[in-house]
Length: 77
Image 1: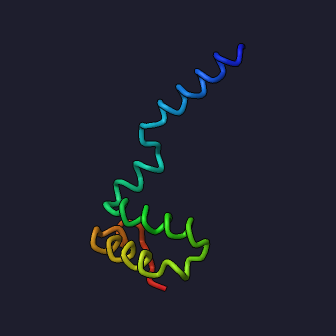
Image 2 (image 1 turned 180 degrees about the vertical axis):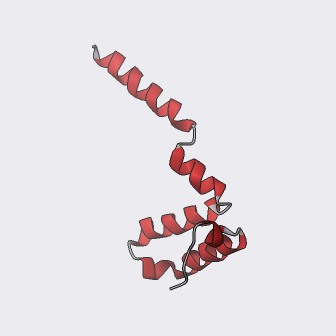
């Protein structure tokens, strides 16, 4: 396979990746995908969950508001 063909195949694979995968579908189904994204972005930037308490609390409140704690048998620690 020539280098041009390899590049074209790689570009095509990236372009085809717009469809949500199983993980995305599960997160979207919770109703808290935005809160989840903010929480994980915070951790990615700061590398310390303790620095992301407000994002974690927003996610936790959304999770409860959507009824996911009952659906998944979440326990408060």
